[in-house]
Length: 149
Image 1 (tube, one colour):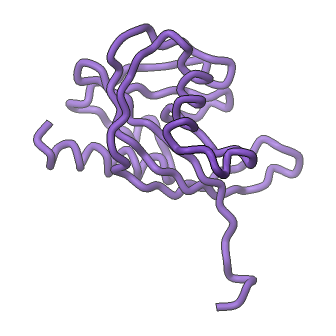
Image 2 (cartoon, one colour):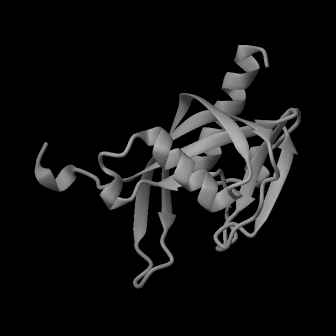
């Protein structure tokens, strides 16, 4: 393999945050549905992933929530057009973690002005997600069903 064949990916952490049999999904300010979490910043190379998750959860859901994070269970590859000069296509590799909201009220943010708690029973992710995020949510739902939750 030569150097020209290697792809460049952003790396992200995502959380499948549940409460009372429901999954939290967020609509971003570009109109796409998403999960809490996001890309790792350049200066966070040495930062533990749990601290990056903490930063992202605070930025996107507010400081008043308490949650637990489980193991990474889904690995996603997503491609999207950036809202930047030239509209470049970027690729994102994301690690999806189990999460449970323990207390507090989730708040919307500037980047995610809309949120929904969707019932895990009968949820049709294809009506909300696309690309790698859709595959990741489908894989998560399959994992949950096999796990007997």
